[in-house]
Length: 378
Image 1 (cartoon, helix red, strand yellow):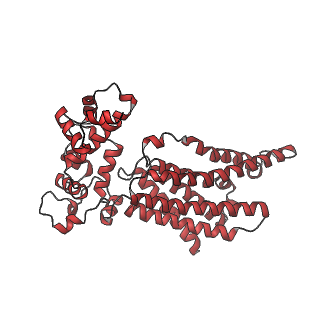
Image 2 (cartoon, rainbow, N blue to C red):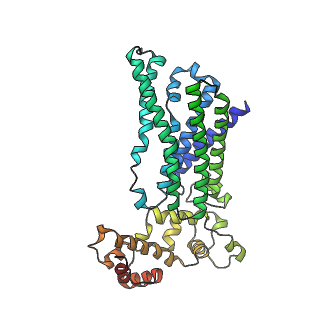
């Protein structure tokens, strides 16, 4: 009873957290959606195990189709896609991500067609059909080895492209834990398949370990993982509209106590949302962007926008935005697609309003003029 309760809590938590990540404008991004999919897939795996413990497959035979699909094949895929979508476009675009779904698609198609026989009794497999089934089963086992072992192992090489040390540490811990879980599952499954050994106790332990991953991801993902250290703000965010402002967070003047200013860190809820707006939505390309527009998007005061940027980056709001614009220009300079653009055109495309502003900001950020940078990068 206690065991299944723990599993059910983890399933519910995984589904809720996944929905929050997908639906929230703060948490949602190209990378985080795969973290949500990972939680959904893990929830389905645990749900199938609960159904098995409770005898649901006997009472409702059609549910066996849900159990037959190897949802576990998706776990290494989603963790890999989560990681590569957090790194730069150059590395990510080299990956043929659709290939990683082949084992899951093959396995799902094979087992569903196979179990039409014993679940629905549509047809019977005899003679040469059994031989073909055995061959297809061996192919499925080969895919299991490839998909369970390769993507997580390859992910370790991708992690080196992550720039944030704290983020890298968190991702390595998640990847290692999941890799150990999947490897143990694969070894246990193969042992039971080839030697006919009872593996139920080991599978129970693995399911319990999966609940730990779910709980731990929920805690780290919400409170630690580049979102916020302000747990009260997160609680309100999860239970209210994210555009609602919190009075105790809005500070429009400079009379804020020094100790409060020092408590603002890079994990600040609103700073993370500002980073997301810049990195994902490229709001800096708006030449009319100012503190007031950003404050409206974040649901806080313009004064608090300045405060968090000043405290965390050590620079003012204008320089913070110009840094993103300069990086955009640098990317254009190195991209052959923009070789016919003048430097000024690149600057204007990136959000600068004039040649003077562009050249001054570029010199301040890089120590070189745009022309000097372009010549040195050839």
